[in-house]
Each structure stands twice: as C-alpha cells, then as structure tokens.
Length: 572
Ligand code: ARG
Image (cartoon, rainbow, N blue to C red; front, side):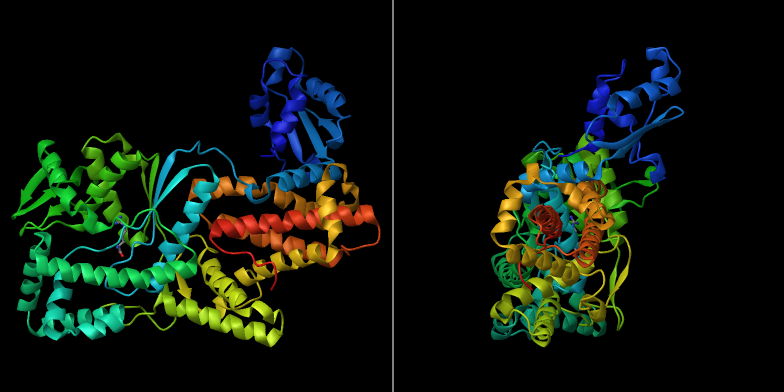
C-alpha cells in the first residue's frame, strides 16, 4: 500500500536523531491550508536530541531533502518543514500502485487472516422478505466484503428467524384454514395470509393463542407432525429468499438460524444457573440487569419455552467455540439496541472476556412514502418485487437511450439492482430514510447508475485507444506525468491515492457509505477531467499519461463498487 507519510518519513529518517521512521511518520501532518504545503513536519520534538533550535533544524532538513524528485518545493517556516509534492512524481507513484495491484488496489493485510463473523440479513421464515430487510442484507454484505478486503477471514452467517411462537400460530392457521396446493404455488404470500388470518381470528377467539403456544411446545419437543410442517415452511421460504440473494449476488457460509440452537439451550441454562445468574420471576427465569441500567433479560417463559434472547446467547457461545472469532459483528436494526445491550451484558456476566468482541452494528428505519408497513395487516412491499421493478424500469431507460441493445438484459440487471443497493449504501447507516422510487431510479446525481456509467465511459475510452492503452500500462514506470499536471487530473490522482485509507476507515466505522461517497467523488472528478481534457490526443506521450489516469480511475471505481457488492459494467 502506497503511503506518502511513510515515504517522506523514510527520506527524513537519515537526517534525524532520536526518532525512527514510524515515529516520524506519525508526526507528519497534512496542513489545513495548502499554502503550507501538502505535508508538514513539526520539529519541536527534535530540539532536545539534536540540541538546536527547532527552526534551525527545520531549515537544515529543508536543505537536505529539497533535491528529492518527490518534492516540487520544500520550505521551512519557523519550526515547520513544509513540503510541496511534485504533482507528476506523486501521480506516477499512485498510478504504479494501481497498475500493479489491480483488483487488489485498496486491499491490505491488517486483518492478518483473523476470523471475523458477519451476521446479516437474517429474515424470519414464512414471512415476506420485504423492503425493510434490504438494509441489513446490503449493509451487511458490504461490511463482509470490506473486512475480507482488509485481510480478515470472514464467516458470513444468516441467522434465520426460523423458530419461536409464531410457528405455533402458523401451524394452527394452516391446519384450520390452509391448503397444501396454495402453499406450494405461492409459499410466502400464502403463509403470510394465514398469519394475518390468525391474528384476525384470535381477536375474536383468544383461545387460539393458547392453542398456538401448545403447538409450539410440541415443536420444541420435536413432535413429528409439527416438525415436518415447520421444516416444509422453512424449505419453501428459503427457496424464495435464495432467489433474492441470487439477484443481489449474496452468498453465505452458514444458514444456522435460531432453530439451530434449540438443542444448545439446556447447556446455557445450566451454565447460567451454576454461575448464579438466574432468578425466578413469577415462574419465568430472568437475569437481573438493574445494576447496568437495563431491564431484566427474560431467559425462559413460565411455560418453559425458550426465547429470542436465549438463542442469541447460545449462538454467541457456539460461534466463539466454532470460529474463535476476533470480532462477531451483527448487522441488525437499531430497534434491537436494547436486546443487544442485554444479551451482551449477560454474556459478560457469564465471565466471557470476548463479550465485548460481539459488536452490534445498528441502522435506521426504512419507511415507505405511503406509510408504515405491517406484516400482520399484510401491508408489505416485497424486496423481490422492488428488484424486478428496478430492472424493468432500467430496461426502459436503456431502450429510450437506444444504446448497447445487444446485452440489454444483463446490463439492466447490473444497473437496476445496483441502483437499489447503491441508494441503500449512500447515507450513514444510522439515518432513517424513506424509500422512494424517484430517487432510486434517478439516473443522474449521486447514484449507482451514475457511478457505473462513469466506469463504462472510462472502459470505452480504453477500448477506443486499442493497443495504445496496453502499451501505456506496460510502460507506466517511464511515463511522463507532467502532461497531466492540471488541477482536475491532480485532484483525481489524490482521490485515487486516498482510496486504501478510505477502505480502512469504512471498516473501522462499519460504515460502507464512506466508500460510496468516495467513489462518487472519484466518478465526479473523472468526469471533470474527461470534460476538461481531450484524452485520445495525437501526442503519444501525452495520450499515454492520460490513458494511465483513466485506467486508474476506472479500477478504483470498480474496486469500490465491488466492496458495495455492485457490479461494474464495461459497457452501458
Ligand atoms: N430475525 C430477526 C428479525 O427479523 C433478526 C435477527 C437478528 N439477529 C440476531 N442475532 N438477533 O427481526
């Protein structure tokens, strides 16, 4: 990874006493005011070891390094050494890094292959996979890609909501009003209608709730008939979920959902008991968390059935034992903040020092322009419908523009689905937002299609250049970058240079939007360069430099999109 501060520190190290290269690198600043240089080094710390006034040291250092080709100018101002980077030299270094690293540009090995669990999406079985699920699904997918790119060994888990009292309700409803063929023909919509009907009927006849609880207990006890029905609902649901994951290009290493932990619960209960954490409360069992300012964690209900929180505790213990994670990341809505605080606190009380390596990454609500969704009332927008509609509308746009009709289906898939994903990853995840068709499919502005189009534009320039493009990349070491010393080119080179830092930052903050915004900047800057300058000029040397920059911009956009889980079309 190219690191200018390290590079400069390397140049300074030979002339400084008492500090090593990495200490020097840490002291190097980027001045607010570019009149003070691109980088500055304060010399105060050196006064003691070098036994001279800081200003004198700064002046001496300036003299020593001024001749290096990396600098256009080096000045000392009082105790500061101000360094102005030579644009051409800087650009050449950055371009060489991109050309040599290609699809790996921006990647690093800070992760050292340490295992990181990323749990994301985790929808509930037999319920619609709706637009609300897009957030965890797409944000989590991107966090997984970012962590892999940073050299972690990522384990992708879908903690399916495939257990709990709602299955009692579903089974009761199916037995009373259900039809097998309907479920087979249209599983989720049919199952959802049963769920809705159950709640309507239960308002009139509350004994239905008791019946549902009893059926769930039978399921927990592994009774054959209930288990088969449950398994059937699960299989049918997964078929539907898988279709959506395929459209989004999402894969998992494990679908161990809530049901997976049903036989791992007794051990957890035993452990909680032995550690003196369980208390009786009106027949139910709880862990008191008052000391931590939290409501009690309800571990088992009075009828003995287990709960969501208990399954999360069992899942965390299982993951630690199975994967020995360095981090265990949960991409789950902020509505569940309290739930995560509670169970992570319980795990800590159990004496597990890795409790704080369980990290809840929350995000805000998505709502619809026409009002809130309600599964119980059947008011939902299916994610699959949204994706299909995005693809259809994209197809129309492409037809209107009358471009590239040869692979219209494939392009519309990439662009339509990319547009939905990109919008999802554009804002800070914690913000609530309103899903709006106009915004998703607005192909101008800071959108996925805009960034993808910029990538395709750069690709087309390189295609049109033919063999000259390959030659330019092969000869990059001797390219003359002074041809691209203009402001837009230099800005572009600086943005490309910053990409690896941006990826690190996004990983530390669990915030893919940091990457999204950066590649929008790269795209805008490339388009400015494209409009300001003619790329395919007659002068071979000038053309070579410009093609190299075009390639680097394209590669950076591609790598950024890939971290968001979005494809980068070569043609559009
Ligand atoms: N299935 C839950 C829901 O749809 C989300 C699961 C979140 N993950 C967890 N480990 N609790 O609300």
